[in-house]
Amino acid sequence: MPRFPVTATSATGLSDRVFSRLAARAKDHPGPVHPLHVGDTYLEPLEAARAEAQRTADHPRLHNYAPVQGQPELLDAIAAHLGRRGDQLVDRETIQVTSGATAGLSVVIEALLDPGDEVLLPAPFWPLIRGIINKRGARAVEVPFFDRIDDDDFDVEAALEAAVTEKTAAIYVNTPHNPTGRILPDTVVAAIAAVAERHDLWILSDEVYEELYFGGLPPTPVWARADYQDRCVAVHSVSKAYGLAGARVGWAHGPHAAMEAIRGVQTFSTYCAPKPMQLGAARALTDGAAWLAEARAAYDRAASTTAAKLGLRKPDGGTFVFFDVSARLREGEDTVGLLERCLEAGVLLTPGAASGKDYGSWVRLCFTSVPLDQLEDALDRLAPIVGRRL
Ligand SMILES: Cc1ncc(COP(=O)(O)O)c(C=O)c1O
Image (cartoon, rainbow, N blue to C red; front, side):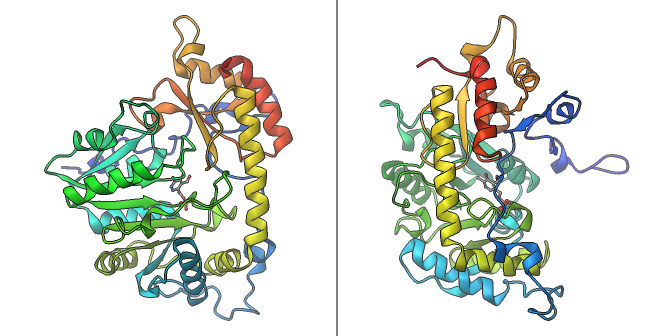
């Protein structure tokens, strides 16, 4: 039992150094370091969506609390967005604004799961999701997945089934995906739904990259499918699509009963998301189509450049590439040693172990955190260390 000076068991292993233990050392590095370890953007957001564009003169009581469910302007914008993306009317009551998707997933998991429950976590995965599950006292059950889906002998249902126990309560789905950049094909999405239905599981759909796809037409969101709808709670964000990560605005939506519980937990978590930035997010959603199209085109070019310079498959979407570097390790060297060499060359990357226990010899690179000329410089520095010869 934790007592002074012992901290909570559920906090054990949680750390703010998840993206790179090398980041602190980068400060001592002579010369510039390209920060390709954290998923962010070099683009400034749409002017009307920026913090400085929200003015008390235009919005009296701008700095008061917002309603728990969300600021009405933002709820309207989200309902319109979901209607467009899912090609269906979404009941406004089933939307809950959150402080970004990170807090959103935390609230959703607290509302739907009990301590001791297990969540199937297709791996590799976004580094924070494992900690968010652990923080609830639940258990993340890693299932090697995204790097196998093209293998002829990989059976999606069998892989998930093998990880199901009596305690399994949910499965986490993220497409477009951090870190692999994959968009899950229809057959895989359907297989996930079949397992969820067979075992009465919730589906937690992480939609933060929903707008970042490079193949032309937007993929159908999983939450809009008939085989997901009853059991899926989807979590979205303006962080990635609109370059508003610092705004901390996102939202969840799903079946009525789930949303009632989620709204309850939200009330006792952050109460509401920051009101000025909810107004900014509403402007991004209503007026940001051209900004988004330009950002998507720029990221698409960055994805192509990255894939070409490092000899990798071009990602389908998202902001990352994720690749195995075991063939590039020197005699007796581990991945940390290789990442140190990358830092010496002036580039920070994320160790693959942050994305799952089976990915210790992989690394993750974000291709949207610096402009294209800097990205090219970073890739030229990295290619001799981690590049593949196709
Ligand atoms: C898959 C995934 N989900 C959620 C988040 C968090 O989004 P937010 O900034 O809205 O908290 C990220 C951020 O990198 C992510 O990659």
